[in-house]
Image (cartoon, rainbow, N blue to C red; front, side):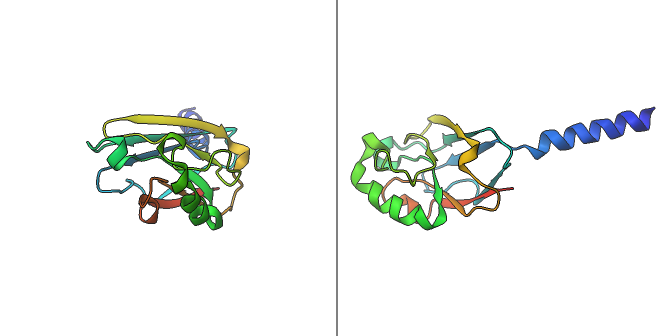
Length: 146
């Protein structure tokens, strides 16, 4: 009986672990995310992006956000977004190439946003990045959907 209970516990733990639907990132005043890649499950109905700015600098000087695009769209979206300004989170409003994004925040702040998991496909080629001007060149990573 104990063996059956232990096996059931392992199965439940495996299923709980298998569906990762949260992207949890930290950004700092050194223009770095704490992770170079994140993984989410393709079975997620909703995916949440959580961002914490662990630095101290204000939003106008060292603001950070998280934007997600396909990898081929990443640089054009980042370059186009620079013209949009801080009120638009340095992303062109209604840009269909942007899958999801958080608002731009300053040091000590946190933000989150949720989006439809159907926007991502298993095996797709995705990049997450900070769209603040200049940050996107180094403050980026790979989003893996499995």
